[in-house]
Length: 148
Image 1 (cartoon, rainbow, N blue to C red):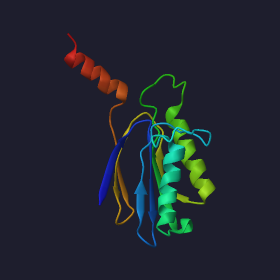
Image 2 (image 1 turned 30 degrees about the vertical axis):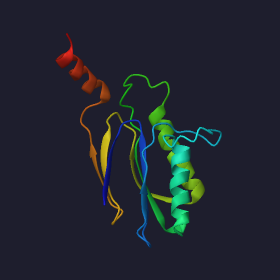
Image 3 (image 1 turned 90 degrees about the horizontal axis):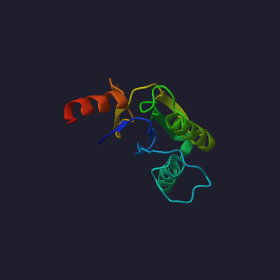
């Protein structure tokens, strides 16, 4: 199966067990933390934990799992990103994967442009395309074309 998503400051973690060919992918908006009890899977901390739990329920050995991490751009605030959402999203993913002992075999994160990724769950391969325009540039074009 091919699973795809488009990322700006959001992050997607693709997990693939090379032995059993079990795959998982998420897309989260905010980093979250262990103190976050909202149950919101749009937060990286919970989302990654849910994926790992799902893999463990399928008897996957985490030592056989490869991770690929994408996103975390600074596409909304070119000049100043006071919240550093993209950067914090990436840091959450890398830290949690490290705690689980899951190897990050590929990543493409940060920068000022979004990405589109396509994850092949049969092979574990991810195709990525860097989007050419930032969110600000797209919004400026929309404003020019649709303003009154």
